[in-house]
Amino acid sequence: MSSETLRSLAEQSGAWPFEEARKIVARLKKSPKDEVIFSTGYGPSGLPHIGTFGEVARTTMVRHAFRVLTDDKIRTRLLAFSDDMDGLRKVPDNVPNGEMLKEDLGKPLTRVRDPFGTHPSFGAHNNARLRAFLDTFGFDYEFLSATECYTSGRFDKALLQVLSHYDKVMAVMLPSLREERAQTYSPFLPISERTGIVLQVPVTAHDPATGTITYEDPDTKESVTTPVTGGRCKLQWKPDWAMRWYALGVDYEMAGKDLIDSVKLSGEINRAIGGTPPEGFNYELFLDEKGQKISKSKGNGLTIDEWLRYASPESLSLFMYREPKAAKRLYFDVIPRNVDEYFQFLDGYQRQDDKQRLSNPVWHIHSGQPPAPDMPINFQLLLTLVSSSNAENAETLWGFIARYRPGVSPQTHPRLNAMVGYALNYYRDFVLPTKSFREPADRERAALMDLRDALSNMPVDATAEKIQDVVYEIGRREPFLDEKKKAKDGKPGVSLDWFNMLYQVLLGQEKGPRFGTFVAAYGLKNTVDMIDGALARSA
View 1 (cartoon, rainbow, N blue to C red):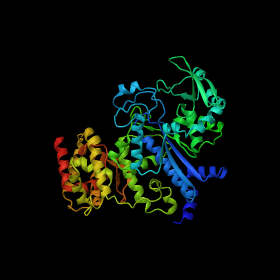
View 2: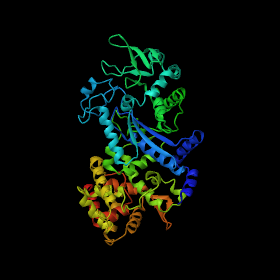
View 3: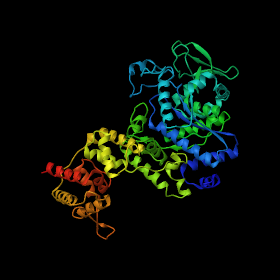
View 4: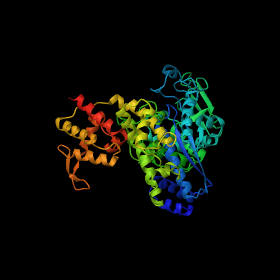
């Protein structure tokens, strides 16, 4: 596809990254510039979680869409900005040495001691964790530390701009505050030279001419005058956000739905100091298994490392791509579906025309260059094979795979080999502890006996389709008949209850892959033995 054709299709595409990128194109028509800055923010008060990654992944997708729309003629940069100069407000629940952290409450995160003992500060530790993960995914980004930007003087000009528009900034902020808070509010937070703590104190005077503010030390009651530059002060976070956009020339930054009001206020402050707020959108929040918002400090939901223990990076990218404006549960049970659907999208990409491909998630996940599909067995089937065989190692699992897909090996299919490892980890951690076999009812027992006999009489090389036909035929009885459904040959349909019963009774799990495919991979004799075992347990 030529770049001209690609651009033309992108201009019409309904895929959300293109919709977002078109906002930036329209922005440039009003205010042309030769470089576009994309930005993401990270608060390193807790360990990075998947929501942090999601913001970088989604912004990267928009950045690539923008490059397509502009034929890559405008330079782009992605800044991963860490708000590591924030004061530590509370001790996270999911880190060691909490008592030590209590002693450092109120200090900038880059001055808080590292509870893990591996880095100069807690902020540095969490920044390193974030960068290591982003590097693992191969993101093209520039990391920026708030501490470095404040202390190096990079923000000095913008800070003086805020100081010179102090009254305008206050006029934006004060209506948003409770009356008591408004009495003591200041956009500037001085950092005490005596204690190192980020102080939330009233400013008694501000002087744009000298670039200073004056405040009363909360402990000594002395009047202190300090420059707002050079890292001696930081801004409250809404003015800080606005100042950062101004200082760095940010053109695009998305944020969580819980920050809608904050984005509006920061945008007003940005305009008040002479800037133009960036484009962006508010994505929905991720929820844990209880439907609660995921929090870095609580450590609920999934961590980055946990997802990668059970599934590929691409499956995580798919989760991030889909429905960014819809709230989604981010828990372990979403992993298998995303793994398999990633490969389904990859396989479908080969059969799509150019227009359809631009709406396929894998086009955006792989920046327009999806790899060829090469996954001869899906994740759900792997999990079921592990569960049925109680496989303790990859060699056992590969024995089933080799029989089901002759010629397929760890050497010929390294991505499948990685998925075998994911399946073993997932089974041990989540499936095995919850395995619960139920006993079949009388009619279910009779159906199982008939299925056992039918499978026993099939040739050992029977295909998955032939096996599935037999499974369907045995299931055409009460209570599994579904008269509303019709098979291709006109026979009555079979309800999902039949297949659910097979997995609950035979494997101790609620659901599984297509049963005929499972039997073909697991083996007819092994399946017959499994049915015999289930019947013996319930005798």
